[in-house]
Length: 364
Image (cartoon, rainbow, N blue to C red):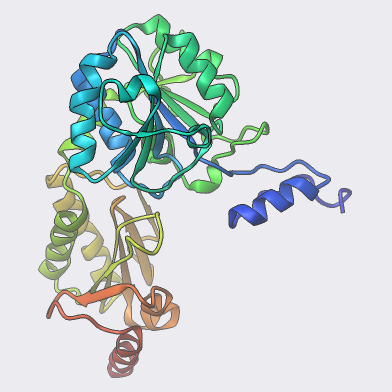
């Protein structure tokens, strides 16, 4: 097959990707583990570092860009870790630390395996390190070369961090690793990231580079600070549902998918009676979430389509005609997830919903 296939991009579970990578006789662009780090450096602004580290871990546990190990410079560890640990504990995050970490805060002892584990859960390993060189050595030894961040007010240290993490896909400054999976660094989808030696990152807009002299470091602090003020989760659902109901969208259904996958927290599905109404629904949702400081990550479809998708990060809104909704049957796809119709707030099984839309489509 090598004479017919130039490259393979496997999409699936870890076992599939490992097997393809092991057995393939052509180059493989793969996205495997996401063992991401945040390093709080000697010259970090500690309040900012605390906000970044907290978001890096708790924004969403199950994504490949979540922080799994927090590295803290020994010169700021005593001042930084107590408040940081308290915030993590309040959120229910289990802390595992090195010996020096456990001299400062209460934490379970970290094992050698912890440093190379992608938890995808509310667990965090913490290590106190002796400066930038030790942090880089740790990341290069234990990391998966996905995304690693430094928090420092010293530009030279930030640039050295990015340049010397030779195989890391994305090095970020003043932002957390979750930023690499979103539109602020030119995101399109998970297929745009490669943690192997065949580098396949997305194009990065010039405006997002921190400085011409530091081409591998993204200055995302302005975005990060604004992200803290955005509404999320259930509050964002309420705004989107209100927008849809304001333009008379039919059968607005909210599906809680937090326990089913890591792409988003909620799906909203709404029916429009015509392409024109779908366009109005899209415009209204855009307008109302913008007023709350939320910038959509992307859109698929156009106003004259039978199906338009608006990606709000924590919430994905599907606006469809009745025939498209019955045909694609997204409710059945998320069978087992909690589903509630906005009009009555009651749970509905996928079978009930499928029958309902079949009747609606027949009536139309």
